[in-house]
Image (cartoon, rainbow, N blue to C red; front, side, top):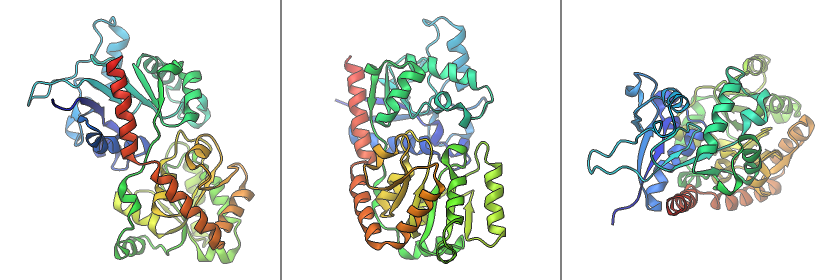
Length: 385
């Protein structure tokens, strides 16, 4: 008997649509694409291409309509006529048993739909999101989420928000944490790490942050905390910020540039997209700092754990659940507390060693293989109900 087949949404994993750099949802979609076959599933990747943009797809096959077109069809046509039909596989004529929407692009499809809702940020904290068409987008998202046959939340923290903000029935939600790939547990070749660091003018032992520059990531306070450190520590350890500019990041990018011009050891890498180079940057760092105000999960923290880097993390939203004591947690609104934690982690070797060991243990519990196994259990539950 052949393995069951799932249609997986891979729009956010398409380099041609994302500019080459994957955000957390893109990392999640790509990871499931690789891990689900080991959990017993044949995976057919599908992507929503913009009108006339199918040539930009390299990961998934284009769905019959763009997301905007499929959403409009949902709104205008009676439900009996609205479902999007998944195309059969030309090789064997089989149609996938279900569709997994990994990225909030949820439309009616002629198969059961599992939807991963990573957080409820646009509704819970609209002040951190682009206001353009926000109300319409939130209404459409909530409407679509309620129609999914089953919802996956990436943390227990997210469940209450999904119930409150999207109106999802809690009985239709399963918690399946995100993970980290096996390669993160392996130390990259020292020569490769050295070459990447030299390319970007970095010295080993720096403070590292990874994430899109946007208000909820709290990078402004991270910069303030770094500049509050003693001069001797700033001279010894750079602050390296890896992330593309996002919404409302103009003032932050100005401040990063100003710090650099003032002779501070601040490096902003805005266009780094290569996965191996990112691994090299983790390997060359001394402390990973993640002071985010809001996370549905926080994949970079687990990447740092697996890479053997001690972590200073915010104690907000889902992060304590993800870290389980493996990070040195701080109140993200306190610059002084953040600076003290950064200094302690940089100077206290015993503290560093404890958190490195705890982080590796925690990362071993959060692998993409385990995510795929638990996701497979959700699929089987939906198909048997």
